[in-house]
Length: 156
Image (cartoon, rainbow, N blue to C red; front, side):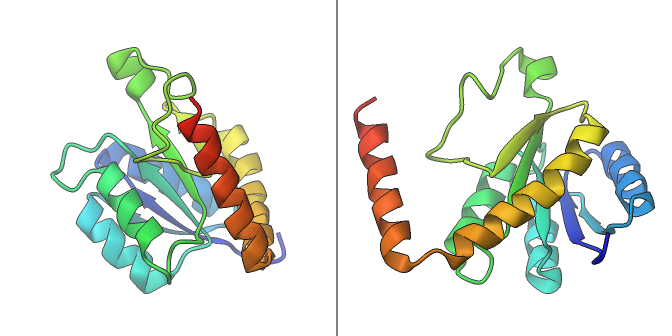
């Protein structure tokens, strides 16, 4: 890996934070962690990571959905790719891929817990590459794609 990508993990499960921090660091990433949403937003603003791993079902008041909305509404942060993570499948028997909520949470990609680590290692450079490509698109193209997405969601 030519450049050490910077990752911020926001999750209220300290065991998960420790495990993922150790795993990603051993694989050449620079890793920062936050155990609640408010700390996560502060850390993301400070570090400007290349990618964010964001739990959507945190027990704290500042949930992953709120963190997501703050990131996407902040012009300085909105282009940082987000990998959503959750134990919804195990905890609630809900498969996010079958019941996505694009209005409140539309990450660049999504992983169920327990996280497949090898899959995560493949995803990280891919979401970074796609985010860079998306950022380079002309404004008219972004607007047109957004209009198409809005029309598609209204027709459902």
